Length: 457
Ligand SMILES: [Fe+2]
Ligand SMILES: [Fe+2]
Image (cartoon, rainbow, N blue to C red; front, side):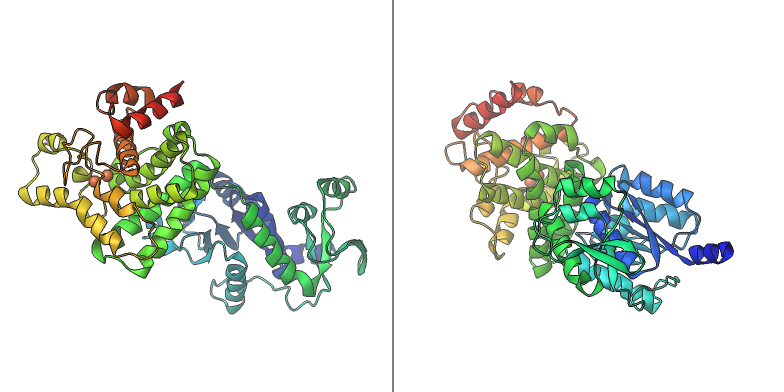
């Protein structure tokens, strides 16, 4: 008997899932364990996943988010490929892998696109069965088991149970423990934990409905991504936005990406719009200056808007989209670093005449491009057109002064200046405020300046 048990155990597959959301890990584990003869191990960070990979002798499949604490999914993939391990790697992320530069050389074997996780998992199970990943994992689909198991704590995230819930008394004997439509409280979770009940059960034919309802709920209550992760994701999407806009102009893909990136950025900003937190957690990558600079301006501009009590979603959207598109015509980061004629002239080695033309025209050209797009809120084109104007009228293309620069454009110019200082490692807000006192002492710039001062107190 013992030998038979060991043999069966050996045949059970091992799957690792890495994601920051515990509810999501639990739900995906539940789905996989009910569909495949597999044990699922969970990791909430890249280092946790790598430790599991090192500790567990034979792993059949890894499903991982890209943005994780202490690393990324692409780093996990690179690590297993470096050691010649052929473990299939499935990316589970809100962006397809071909839009994430880190997967360019080593793409994942498959991907699940959030939030359509249930469809993605159906695809993965289908691909396991069809042999796509060349792994042997037995299916439970044909076992015709009448019940499938769920973890009690998953039930708590649902407002109302979508199905009846059963407790297992003995093999083949189940007793109804809660009814469809009931709520399942934290006390209920504790009650089952005290009784050492690890799993509750639902009728197998209702499992799809249960699973879909649970995933929907997880998406609704999902914790926003940590700021650093959201910034990484924004920067990755910004890279594609920059490329498509520069090379191909306005395409449906570009508009979809802008919408997706705006959603990602706003989900974080609305929960945590503190300018100070952006300062401590965002940094500009000098090797990817234009991309990270554009993504950083989105956060900094919204942080300033919040300080001015302009925290409508509409304002955040306008500033965020303007940030993503303001420098689309530039592909030389050295040009993007120049804000004024003085900075341009001081650059060593000097720029060419052609580079001067590109730089002087980029804000107008970006605004023209925006005017050809659908579904872009009003004012974004003006913000972008004016992002190199200065309060004293020394900017370009029109030399507008503080009287004629629109309030939203003034806010954007300040955010652009502030993000420029992030790059030069003078991130301390007080340094910036002191250095800009004279320049911002006019019109709407002064109002912004005073709002920045209250942030420091
Ligand atoms: Fe810029
Ligand atoms: Fe610019």
